[in-house]
Length: 121
Length: 104
Image 1 (cartoon, helix red, strand yellow):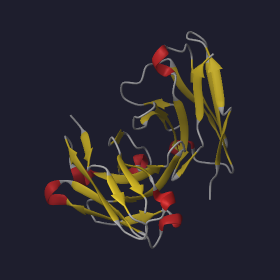
Image 2 (cartoon, one colour):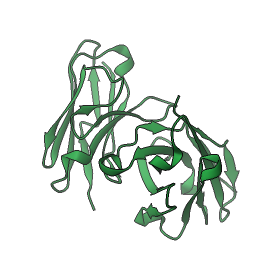
Image 3 (tube, chains in turn red, cyan):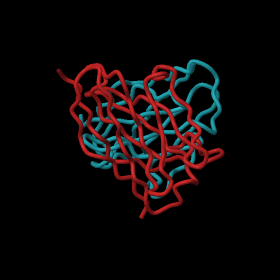
């Protein structure tokens, strides 16, 4: 079945970087965008950006420009999201979610279970 | 930049009742890209509706979406116990703040 399996929880200090992985299975990895969405404790959903696994092209939300890098390794069907210069308000659950190309670009139909990132000194 | 507003913030209802959730955009948006998600505590969001009115795979027909322009609605015709959750609308990279449907 289609699955997105994310890496485990992370605890980081302010100013550090974190890299979260998302391994896809059950479908052709390069046929779908991979979005990253985060959710701070008790808050709503915040879109961070997407990567096109086929080309490596990215589209980042303005609020994360310069701090986020999304990459992929097609040989292992895995997408990565790296967030740098971490602050305490980056403490959140980070989700990956796939969306098909074309009219479905923004339709996130399968989600990972989330990776908790805690930023604390 | 599109801003989505959802109302009400919380909807207190009983099983069997009808739920009507609203999503309003700050400008006219493309219906094709309006989606609704359900999220239960401790779980990832789940896609319910896309293209404003198309149910995602496996979504029961008690869920329906409608609307166009800047105003969209998610309706749950008869609430089941498993429907009590938070619902988010989404257009492109913008999510609404969510509507919580809880037990009256």
